[in-house]
Amino acid sequence: MNKDGFEPKIVGFCCNWCSYRGADMAGTARMKSAPNVRIVRVMCSGRVDPIFVLKAFKEGADGVLILGCHPGDCHYAEGNYKAARRVPLLKKMLEQLGIEDERVRLDWVSASEGNRFTKIVNEITAKVKELGPLSRDEREPNG
Amino acid sequence: MAKLKLALYWAASCGGCDVAVLDINEKILDVAELADIVLWPIAMDFKYHHIEAMDDGGIDVCLFNGAVRNSEQEKIAKLLRAKSKVMVAFGSCACFGGIPALGNFTNRNEIFQRAYVEAPTNVNTNGTFPQTLTQVEEGELELPEFYDTVLTLADVVDVEYFVPGCPPPVDLILKVVDALATNSLPPPGAVIASEKTLCDECERKKEEKKITKIYRPHEIIPDPEKCLLEQGIICMGPATRGGCGQRCILANMPCRGCFGPPVGVYDQGAKMLSAIASIYATDGEEDIARMVEEVVDPAGTFYRFGMSASMLKRKRM
Image (tube, rainbow over the protein chains, first blue to last red):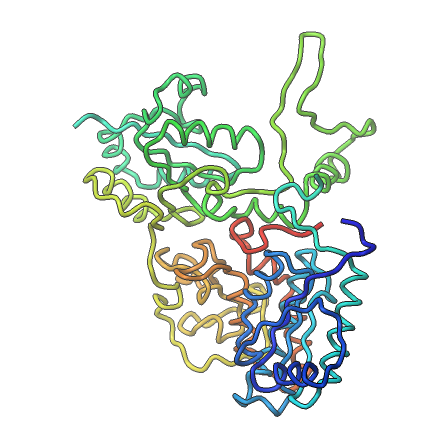
């Protein structure tokens, strides 16, 4: 695929209590952001099993965004801390699998931070655009 | 009852699975009583054309060990599939790719560079690499095509049963032999092992799972009574199917995951990664960074035997 004109597909996991509402906030306030992030609502960023991220990449995502409540604000007290431990280790493993660090981003967005939501979405979209599409051929990656 | 026709084949494997068949000791005589072996490259002299000459379905059971990483292995897997009523993926390599599937962190080109150029014992000034076809005076020579990606047996043919293990333990081999003898095979698709995880079967003392440092096996002499994970050693038990007889655990070594993912788990490595991240006690970003550093080779450790059957299957290149 040509890098120019490449529109990445990014799967965004947003927690029900803060980040999804932050996204909602951005929507109702009619803030503009890149249309590349497809949001999946989960109850908590701690619910995001690393398998979800691997599956997203397997099924065609070029990037994965995980958004949760700010540290200390988790509806379930410490789900976001679980995500904070998992994602860095997952990133290290993904790099060994040829998936660059910047294709995955974990960040925090509260229910009132529509601005922050759009900023993060625009940033990861620009970053993944720069990286280009993720190679998908499982059997003969070199053609 | 007419004797069963049995084929044993090895593809990308070390030969350990074939040796494991002999480890059933005198029971091998029961196998000889029960079955005529029609192909067993490691032990007996049969040729591929003997198999090609058989009717489809002419072999009752094929125990296929090894992963599939070249065109010859794929071709023979398809031939044996056509001739066999029951195809068994025998051992971790046939089931999940096994150790050869660590090759999925690289590709054909890099492997050839390493094997035929960089390896210190090589003198390859002409840059000679294996070719699938080579012209010589006497005619054309043919070599199988080496694949970029190591595949499981089930990636290339339909498989009825999976017998995991590196190699499969004797009691599971006997279970298969008994099931054949008494015609009581489980429904197709079954994994001949335990339905529980290794952790579930392990009898070590388990207390609170909170660790502050991860040790590699050579850095510590573990307490033989206590849970290895709780001692900070990466033991694949929580993310690995049981039924192995705990050979490693009883030798005071951590599980390396050769029985593959347990029931309902789609990706062994991701599950193990979750487990490690859950039990590591952290209080801030420095601790998290230390944990990440201490897991020296996450992909190679968590997918040691399972790369071909994992969600991503190989490195993106």
